[in-house]
Length: 380
Image (cartoon, rainbow, N blue to C red; front, side):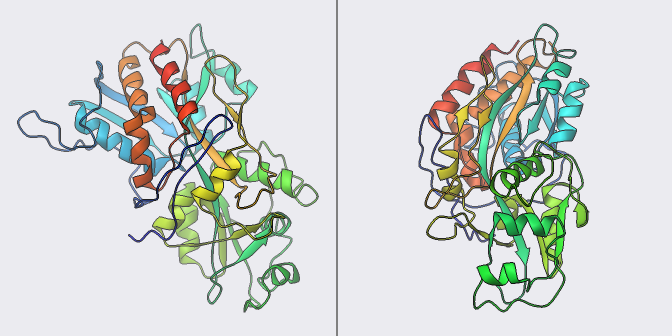
């Protein structure tokens, strides 16, 4: 697979980290990560797994949630299972909302979510986390790409207002004057826009909504906290992989998904006119400039972040997300707790974070990673 963009993250409000680009994994992997790589003579099967501490991990660990982090999770699971014989990590990329629901019903040990738990979700988690509650542990960040397929148009530029109107079914033709104004000289066809959105509850949807509600408040009147698609019209597809596949297959289409799905499927992405001197391309390096303004809003063992969706900084890509792993700070099931802690210790470790570049993602900034590393061993 050819990587057309450089994926790196450089920052948080409390630190910065420069990351090199690397290859991208396929976005179309199975949701069932039960295959353990073969070993011989009891040795570990890969260099990537060589320093993983299994720390009592055993049996099966069920998890579900964000499809945006699915490619990264696939790689983590492969490496962890290679190192820890007899362990099975099963992560289902069913969307952030579905993952949180399963977590709060006690069906999974942890959930992946592209947005932090709401107050009511934290309250609900207390029924499962006996003596504790669900906490947000950031694990990976990156841009939400607006992908499109339009023959003859290689460098499409849109702004927040135009994106809002397209996804709200108010701009329906590719040669609409608002699009033409942003793309002088482009040969825009007089054809209908096919806008795709998520059919499942999604933190990616929520983060896009927060961006549109902030940067295009006059044009996006929907609930910015909605994880289910709030607008009328358009076509729905399941998960980031479903939306990416739909856009890849349909001429005149547009949709949104984490950047790794665009690179893996060779989908063109929109550059955003933010008010800076030049439109900003969807790259992890550019997203990092927006993530640099993130602030920790969680307290105690909760590391929820507040992102700046309205940035106009030069080269800062504004549609960003941070994916969290959500687990009980106290009250985890005794039979799965050792595996949960060992796996999350690996994913947030220096080694686990380094492999994110191979999956088209970006490691956490050093200081935030250090904070999460200090919390995971205290889970009980």
